[in-house]
Image 1 (cartoon, rainbow, N blue to C red):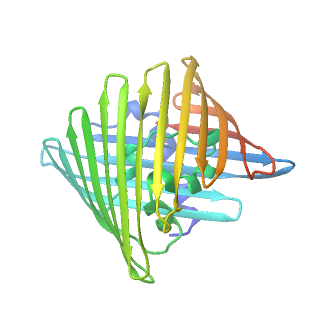
Image 2: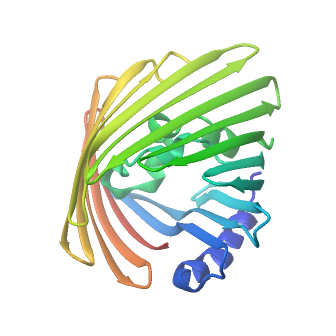
Length: 297
């Protein structure tokens, strides 16, 4: 669904929720962000709004609820939005979603945006998040599907299925799991799509340490020629200089190209933040500066 209006609705709904996330009604949870991003490189610039958020409603003790999500951008000449919604049923530590759920992969990665640029990460995201978000943004078709989430203490696992039936039938299967023990974490995910004219598989794994003060991680992705036909390596580290200020460095090596980025995020009011970032690398003519303002919760 390619329209600016959904993104403006995100701004209208998301920002108040972010500013008052602690006062959401019982049974309602939310997470996400909305950000204005300005990119400049050697006298050329681009700017726009990018947003991604989810709200879950689980009233009463029936176990039934509803998930709503939106991922979109209004950036220069590009305006795209992907709307998610699913009926959910939760029993114990198991949650089942029916409708248009999120892909399982995105919840099992901690790789930060290179140079803090969310716009750049829309393309780089295929390395960790798979195809569903990008395919949905670029298609007028809504991918119907199912999702399962299980909480097993130190291990959290998700599985999802989506079907695209626009020009040809394409089935997308995803699985992800994360293990956390103290400050240590490890995760892995797999996505496979099967269509009439092509099929492919993506495998991603990452691990590292994360504390309230710092985090360090290593990620590896391998995709066949239907994805990016290479192995990608990701390294990152972040440090909180003070409670409001965090600096992050990220390196990405894929297809014989190395990209590196640094960013600084300052949180100044009820989820509001300002960010300054920079990324450069092989086959990049000039480095790119990123200046952003946003809200997150």
